[in-house]
Length: 536
Ligand SMILES: NC(=O)c1ccc[n+]([C@@H]2O[C@H](COP(=O)([O-])OP(=O)(O)OC[C@H]3O[C@@H](n4cnc5c(N)ncnc54)[C@H](O)[C@@H]3O)[C@@H](O)[C@H]2O)c1
Ligand SMILES: O=C(O)[C@H](O)COP(=O)(O)O
Image 1: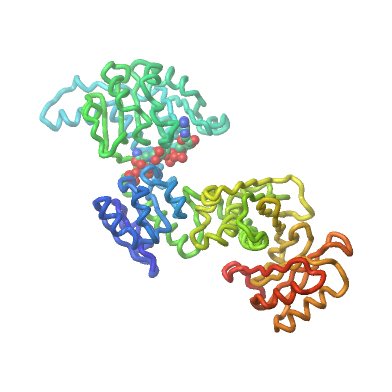
Image 2 (image 1 turned 180 degrees about the horizontal axis):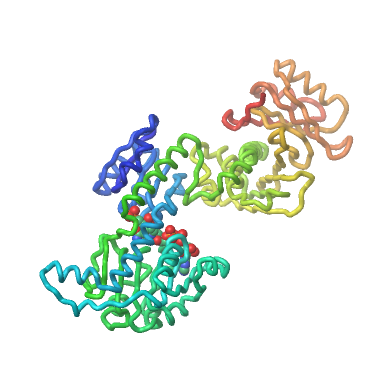
C-alpha cells in the first residue's frame, strides 16, 4: 500500500482516482507546522502540495520513503528540487492544467485595474455614490507588452487581441513563426518598455527574471504604464513598483503574487492605484480539479507502471518516443551493469557513443539508464533515473556523450566504455528487429550475445582445443552452457569467449578455468533478474 500525504487545499474530486485506488491511501493534513510535517514525513511515499507547503532540504531529510513530490499546479519554487534530485525523489507538476484559469485571472486583473472596479466596489458598498472618482481607461487600441510567451502568455495574447489590443511579445524562445501564428509582434524588453500601455509578466521566477521589472526598467516605460503580475512574486521589484506608483510613472498595478506570501508589503497592498489578490490565479473549480486529477493519475502511473510524463527533474520524452526507445533503455541498463563488472573498478571516466538513428534522438534518458546500471553496482538501490547524473558528478566521474552521424553497420548502435586509469572496458550493443537486444562487441572483439542472467567472459589465446576444454571443465561442475560465442581480431591471436550459463557458478569453477594453459582472464558477469528479458 502506498501512502500519499496532501498538505495544501487540493480538490477532493480531483483526488478521487487516488481515493478509489486499492493500492493507495490518502491523508489530508493542512496547516501543519514545519516541525509537525517533518515528524510524519517518514511514513509517506508521495506528497501532494500547492504553493503553500515549503518542501525544504530539512523536510526532505526526514522523508525516508518519499519517491514522488507532486505539485498540483505549475511553479515549483516552494520545492527544493535540487535536494529532491540528489535523493532520487521525482518531482512532478501539472503544466497546462491551470493555464486558462491564470490567463482569465490576468484579464480580470487588467480590466479591474483599468476600470478601478475594486476601488469603486469598496466605495459603493460603503454607501457612497461617486461617479467621478473612478474614471478608467479602455484596453481597446492599446498596446500590451507580454513578457514570457509560454502557455499563459499565449492565452493572454489571444484574449487581449479580442479586446482590440496590439500585442508585443518577448520570450527567448519566441520565434517569428510562432509570433505570426499568434498574430503578435516579437519585441525586445526595451521595445516593450517604450511602446506598451500595459505590461504583463508570465515567466517563472529565475535568476534572470528576479527583479526584471526594477527602477531602471520602469524608468524606460511610458509614463502612466499599467503593470500586471499574475506569474511570480519577485519578477517585479515591489519597492521599485511602489516608488513608480507614487511618482505616477506607473498609473496602475494589478498584482496576484508577491515577494513574500502571505503578502505583507502594506505600501503596495493599500496603494490606491493597486489591485491585489492573494495568489488566486489558479483558484478556479475547474483548474483545481484538473491539477489534482493530473498529479493523482501520474502518481498512480509512477508507482504502478513506472511511467512518468511531467517530471521536473527527469528528461521529458513523449509516449511515442519512449515506446521506440524502450528496447534500448532496457539494453542500456544491462550493458551498464555488465560493463562495471567487466572493468572491476569504479570508473573515473565514462564515454557513451551513439550511432545511426539513435544519434538523432534525445538520448538523455538512455544515458541515464546506462549510468544507473553502472552506479547501482556500488550504490545499489540509492541510485535511480532521477539522481543518476547527480551521483555520477558527486563521485567525480567524467561523462562524455558523443553522437556520431555514422552507422557502424547497424541502423542503431550504442557503445559504452568505462575507464579507470589505463584500464578500460567496453560493450557495444544494438537492438535487432524481431530478435531484441544484442551485445555485438565486448572490448575490441565482435560477438553476438543475447544478454542473459549468467554470463562467462573469457580472454584466451586463439589455439585449437580451447572451446572443448572450457566446455569440459564447466561440464565437470555440472554447469550447462546455453550459448557460446567466440570473438577474435586475427586468427591465432588474442580472442574472447562469451558463454551464457544456466546457473550461477562459484569460485572453484574460476580456479579450474584459470589453471588452463592459454587462458588469460575469466570473468563471471551477472544481471539481476529484474534486468533479464524473458525469452520464449
Ligand atoms: N498566479 C497564479 O496562480 C499562477 C497560475 C499558474 C501559473 N503561474 C505562473 O505563471 C508562470 C508562467 O506559467 P506558464 O504555464 O505559462 O509557463 P510556461 O513554461 O509555459 O511559460 C513560461 C515562459 O517564460 C519564458 N521565459 C523564461 N525566462 C524568460 C525571460 N528571462 N524573459 C522572457 N521570457 C522568459 C519561457 O521561455 C517560457 O516560454 C509560472 O511562473 C507559473 O508558476 C501563476
Ligand atoms: O504555479 C502555479 O501553478 C500557481 O502559482 C498556482 O499556485 P497555487 O496552486 O498555490 O494556487
